[in-house]
Image (cartoon, rainbow, N blue to C red; front, side):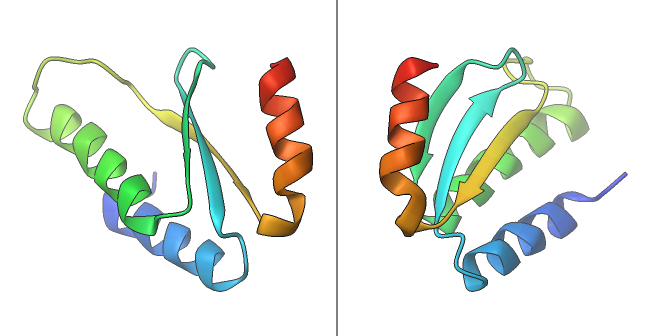
Length: 83
């Protein structure tokens, strides 16, 4: 199992490779938001990590992240609208 640090490192690496947009989904598959900020995504990862470690009130178990480039933004927006 990956650590929170490894997930955050992976997000930064994806961003450096040109995957500069992130669509976030909750553990039920519900779309939450899209961001082009690595900080937004890593802050959400920290939020979930703290719930796991400190046994806070559980609101999310995990998230799914669709990472894509700005060149695919129109296509992804259409997919998300139809989702």
